[in-house]
Length: 383
Length: 136
Image 1: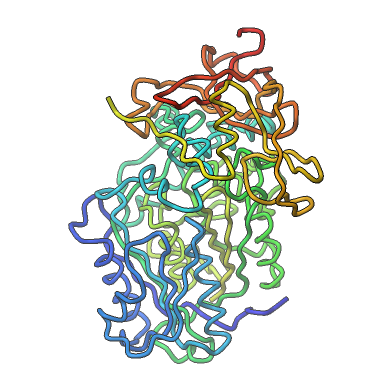
Image 2: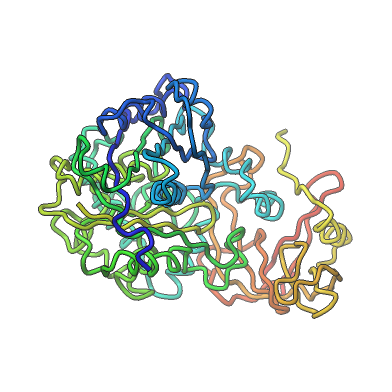
């Protein structure tokens, strides 16, 4: 199953400053990030001949054709999987490049998540949330934190997982943000700070929750042979997959609340890549909530189901831990770019551009996405 | 007064809401193989039949999981926090969520027996809620 292995590379990455008030439209923010990615790749805007546009965003491919003067865009799709979309978009882009449809596919995102409409208001409009919109939102659960909290509670009651273990994830992610000059959070956090933060939707406290952010980020996928002659060292797509959980439209009806779509995607991605979790030097794991990281570690096979709490203890996810994770500060402490910032960071790590958070000799890494009500995506990459 | 979020029903789900309004819990059922399914949808995933019946269920169940909501993310719920939302395994095999009223958070546990009740939340709209069994 080496269908896409090493056939495509990330050849360009870009991001804007992340903030609470960009003073620009979400469309302008993704144009800015895209131009940065195109320059990073050593390309011209008119070299882009394919796009995977963020389905829940403001801009459509037509906006890029108009703004960049693209004469012949050959491929335009979306991958509507919420926070799993950006990695799903990498798969869609790699398919188009490997099939010879496109040379350079641009995958952008831009959002005014802080200054514009907030998460609880946005998701009500998504078709993926229609069913919970009818049956669950009228009773008062309208925000992601409220939909996901029962999964975390079930995990805690079944396996003895604790809020202090969630805190380990928040604290280690914050430490990494402090090394990043483009992170929204700049104050240190202790386990005690986490435990003292106010309860939002039990068991999730404020510091279990990700940020809402203004900004943009983008990457470019190109064919491997072409990538070797481009401006930056290529970062190869070794394995990529998406997975949808049982009962993808409602968590309530899912037989096992503690298993995500990633449990289906991860074995396929590892098989395509020909590596195992032991080979991963650095991981950028979708962290809309602390618990989401813990559950994904289990679903990817870094530990058994139920052992995620113990796995993350004692700084395991720190730069000198057993699995350096979310080295940029993640959605929890850098910015919420729906995981596009995780793809940008993994590329930096594998190029050796990780700055103060560089994992020494990082050769193989992974990035995940988690979206909507449990969709999962994963890409395993190497330098 | 902020408007509540009200259920937007469709052809598949209207019988469920009609039953709730009559203070009855009816679960969509495959008219051919008899499998219960929730939430309402057009096709039976076991036998692919699109013939639909409705089964009035007991409303009894046990708590599968829960969350206590301390922040209202919609102004309609601002006066309600904190409130407890439960995920309930109904005896007949499907799950539901709903408010669990009148409960001390510290006594919440998986497996707690609960029973459905009904709450009128606006003109012509009723929602199912849950109470600890024996308290109705």
